[in-house]
Image (cartoon, rainbow, N blue to C red; front, top):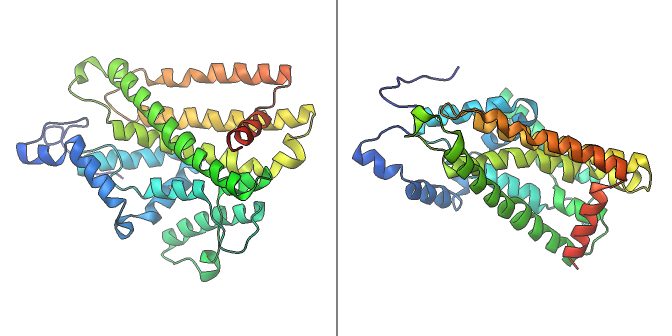
Length: 302
């Protein structure tokens, strides 16, 4: 159960601080602390970040309850530990320690490694050497499935990391930060505001399951099902996209509904209607989302 604090001592929003604490809780100070920890791997709690990644699939509400705890103890909603971002980047960056060939089996190893490590931590055990021996990640696997060369795969990697994840994430976080502060803050809570860092964390939380679904699970079906010129091909491919984007919307909704000073956060679920409409139209028109994505990536890396 999470600890509680009195409203007079620490508000649930961005409560008032004395002059000494205010200097430590400015946006610039928080940003400096976060960026500084990027250079100190030993200060990052990677096991806790793995726990969060696991629960983003099984119980994302538990992840946001931890954000409540951080607000009560550190007076900020956003993460102060960049371990989650680093692990997400590793998922995107991909490497294989077992040999020169990378395939779906290697991609499966990291999923098993992640789950086993989180389970081992929960049980008080360290992962065995065989569990730590080798692992691989998603983007290079995607490049191999698309039969790209080495330099093309590197270009794909840079595109996914800096455009798909960071670039699009900055845009979405900024847009959601503006909308939530402008339209969703309760009238009696105008002294509170949504931290930009929290908006970016919500995007990362929602992006990770989308990444795993599209760049890992989907790999099992691309060559043998999705790429075929048949109804089953674009039905399976588009259904995977429906699940991935739908889950992104759902985790984003959970992130903002967890803030007690926001109202009408249910409107963040409205894009589901447009998503389902596009899904039905794509099936009616025979439009294969995955083929379009593969064509786009191949064009970008030429």
